Amino acid sequence: MTSEETKLVLEAIKSRRSIRKYKETPVPQELIDKVIEAGTYAATGKSQQPWLVIQVTDKTTKDQIRRANALIMGKNEDADPFYGAPVYLIVLAERANPNHVYDGSLMMGNMMLAAHALGLGSCWINRAQQEFEQPEWKEWLKSIGVKGDYEGIAHLAIGFPDENPRPAKPRKKCVVRV
Image 1 (tube, rainbow, N blue to C red):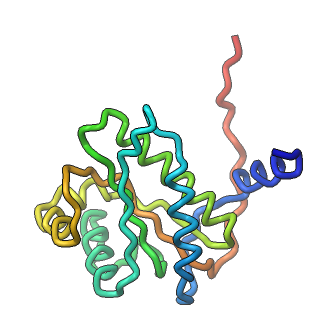
Image 2 (cartoon, rainbow, N blue to C red):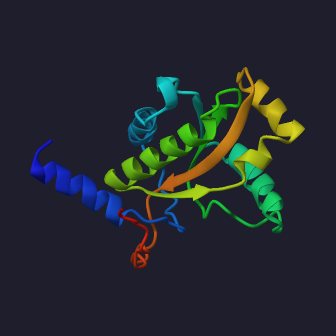
């Protein structure tokens, strides 16, 4: 990696922010594919890659997921915890894998950085674990062909930003040198 490439990577890490307002513009499939592919290159324990990504762009399905997420959050079912994003990526990981939460979280991080590098906004949306514990969502997984015992790690809202990202907050002191 050249020093210029290194600078670009470090700048992307420092400048990525969660986006909470999206344009209705559809995201081209080739960009979604690049985001997902970047996720598959995340580090995993013993390179077991215990994850699964579900891409959701269908309005009806997105509305069902949005409502379920809002209710788990304790909000009215009309609330939009996904901020109007045109694409939801749901990361699940094999429950039996001892590193599944860590591995799925690293996948999310890679996808957020890739989205940023591609000019897309993203936001980590919680409550996937609670959502996919519910019997109706376990059935939904089966209905779309998901076999196995998966735990919901997170949802990733992605789309073209319709806001300027907030500036970074000052970084906390977090290093102890001995």
